[in-house]
Image (cartoon, rainbow, N blue to C red):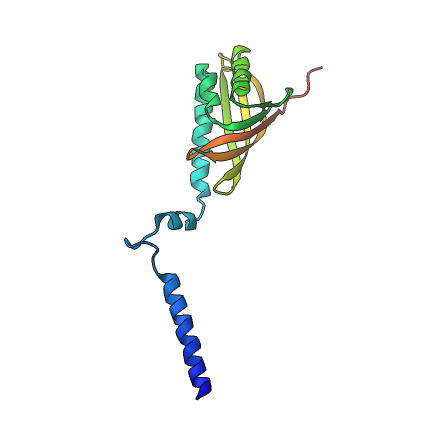
Length: 169
């Protein structure tokens, strides 16, 4: 009898706990914040957003708009380009891209090869090609970018690239 009573008590407590854990957190029957956290990270959607930002990057360079390029970067971004010192912050990044544009870079094509990451930080591996106004290729190479979620948008957080061309002699 004691064993039966003990089993009944354990079953009752377990049932109450199980049922209470399954109840909705709000009267409307849903808890949007909890549901958002429980949704799996959509890497394909992140890739699409990053590819769209890369296309915008190319369009801003074509238009000679260093401010537009800079706005694609996070507030605490760092650019680590080939043959140059690293630059940090939006003012330095804008100056860097204004210098590229003024030196004759009129086109940038960015091609994503692969991405991986989480809902807060995504890594992108890709290739780039720089052209002048006539379409002549000035440089090509590869890059790694860390993208950071900021203000509900993917922003460049760390941008590092290097050329596939031989070093100048």
